[in-house]
Length: 375
Ligand code: AMP
Ligand code: GLY
Image (cartoon, rainbow, N blue to C red; front, side):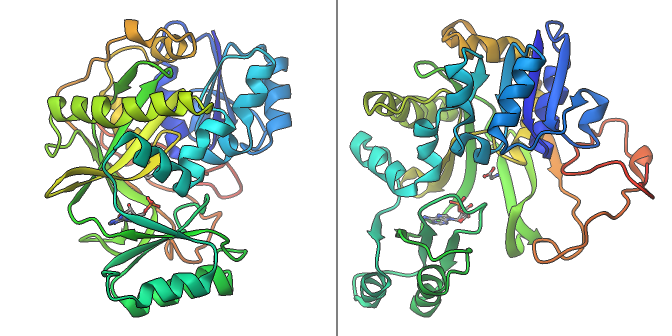
């Protein structure tokens, strides 16, 4: 088979690395990929958001199966366009991807299905949101969430009323996310450990992967500002196989069924971000794609053939697939340029990769070969 992975991050490198191990994988491409994916695939110079370019590349290279990494490609309708052309692709349509791109829509689905989640109120005017924050029944900490894709920057956990007011003003009045946020949620803060449960689904069957924990704050000891993720491990003792299964049957299956009934069917990788509260697991968010950096620690533990499973997914045959896992665990640590997640220097050489331990796998994100590049 001829396979294309869309994206250029470490998640996509991990997907490509795993797909390349399948005996059925004859040719593997990444668009745009990175310096690391070159080791397992051919990189195509097409950006992950360039839907026309991706479609042209897939037709030109006679791709049999495409796997989408980033949410942005989904939100731009890459799956809709590929399906219109009769091309097999792993991921939800734009309608299905709303489960991630609209937090309020996701809340409605959870309300309709009785899936446990934090209480939330929705606002379209800052004055009304600020009034709500001033009420006695509003408790703190509270979580202020912009309703839309914001690359992880649209969420503020506000310790007190003052911080919540500042976040609402920043989002809705100052437009600190780029443009002023039109719809915003104020959500109950959920206390407990966070776990990510990712699952393959063809819209009917839901196959959970190993549960993982990811660490978003930049500093040691889980301190400092939030990032796109500094590390992860899988599996986690916080959820055993039976508990993971329950999350699939009690949370993911009802959501997938409800989405189909609402005319926004979901197939692809569905990711539930959960907090294990004293009252049981509650959902803080859904993502319409594989997690990053979770994917980098989950896939090395998968024993079987990922390509087989993804082909079955696109053919709605996931009920015939069983996933098998290596014993043990995987831990991932992200190395980033100094200053991240604030302003940081790009284009610096990466050195020392030849010195990593034999058991370690190095997944690249956004690297390229260039003048003065390290090894
Ligand atoms: P998100 O962008 O939705 O993944 O949120 C970013 C981070 O904010 C999450 O990983 C949590 O650590 C935190 N968070 C979001 N919602 C809540 C909530 N309701 N209660 C506690 N923490 C939350
Ligand atoms: N690990 C968080 C995410 O992929 O959104």
